[in-house]
Length: 115
Image (cartoon, helix red, strand yellow):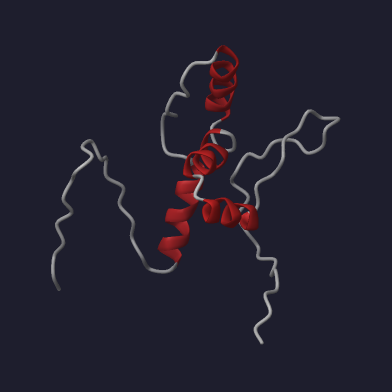
């Protein structure tokens, strides 16, 4: 029988998390297991909002709050989220290189070089 144990790993704390506790007007922290649960339910937009707008971009978090109150659409944040930079660093530690490229069209072709 395989038993899942939650192993605590030393993680680089690059994400700017909200203050904890209701008294400090803090929000809930989204951990690794919560991300897995959200992925399982297929709520990509909520997951994207929690991992980028609400954690990495301080200015974008304020813009999201303002547009939510007014009822407008949420703007896209400028720059690369810190969570993506952390992912690139972890991939580089595994000797993998990730190069982001802008995707303008919905139907695009990826050309692969055969080794």
